[in-house]
Image 1 (spheres, chains in turn blue, brown):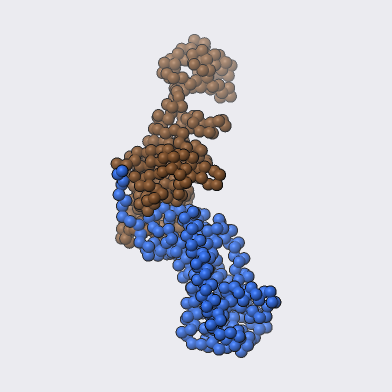
Image 2 (cartoon, chains in turn brown, cyan; image 1 turned 180 degrees about the vertical axis):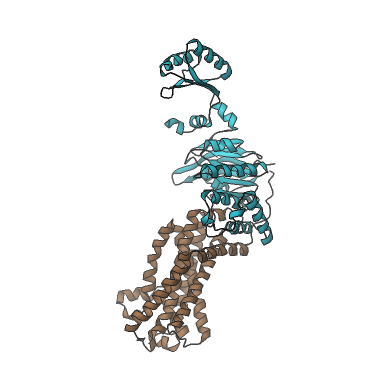
Length: 268
Length: 314
């Protein structure tokens, strides 16, 4: 049977990822609710924790509260940023943008990967901003710049895992509103963790959750990397107690949600 | 040259609903084709399957000789999709949207800029090109959406209900753009639930209902399939309706449809011009005053209602 030869192939994988990512980034930068909403609420919460609770909790161990709080605050801010991935993905599906992209001669996975990469960079911007504000309200590094940069990099990786997680939820939610309402998931993860107060001050049943969910090991890893010995003393365990769990959770979340996104995209 | 579209026993189910129920269709190249059917007939499912967005559950679907399920990436290079199943990014400008899609078709930056400029020009979108899409009117947005499906110079343009929700002026603009594309060598398949849209744009109409093709042909062929010519009589005085009904009943094979409120009688008849002369003579002889007397082909509405399940409801 004769067939009509197809014209030039579509965009290469990197070009497709970047092109799709640039679109997601433009949407973020040009939508004030996305750009300012997250930024303003992040700064506001930092000030509330630092100055409202900070007065009551002056020190944890030998650490000032701001040194204890800031790493936890910075890590959890990435999860709040990642929520946008869910609503964004649901919106793209709902409005037909995903259909348009899927009808183009590019790899389907580039459509999601480009989005997640852009969302991760956006979370990185939020991360840098909260870090800057934390320094302004009194955070000091006690373990050198190198490990602190390591903490930043790990937080970014953690952010990416949560972008994948929320993107998967966006696929399942059906609408942007439904995706938005999934945001409640963030509260137990961020508050019932070691991010703002030590886990050992919580009731026993709650400690069981707080100590064994992904945020706590990542927060403690970032805390020890930025604050060193004082953090190890305050937490009662060295870096080796937290880093493997933090990496395992990050890898595990991605291992579960990346194939899920790919599967849902084929059926979108 | 392979057929533009060849569907054989095409099946697509969603749960217990058979959206495509053994659809058979062969469409040759070289003419605008309209897929006409009521809501839920399977039009969008068929277009989405052609656009590789859905995998058929059974049967075969080829586009220019490429199997849609097995050679999805070849098919995607040949098509452009617009209408209710595709969209543009509202925070980006018209130009940015088109350039994005052009880049995804694999064009270099320079090619993408050139094809964007060309499409903006062809669709008369130049003056809004630098504005964010969220400031566009519904018609402008729809034309940009059409443009996005064109920057890749597709062989086949798939338009899924392209004018649904548009005001008459925007609809006419989109029709003009579509006719122009068809005339300059782009193959076009459009779905619509508007008969006049199919009549206006398409050289070939495929009527689908409940996931199957129920009729296809040129608008003229379909109209003659629903039978016969129609003679319409408007009588001046309400009192003459009964007399006129008797005259027409005596002439026609079947009694006429009578609408007493508008004093209009419609007679279906196989040989319009001959019967027309008899009707005129008969009415004059009976002394019926006539406001208007016309001979016409059946409308597509009459064809549509006669051929689809909606006809049973009327």
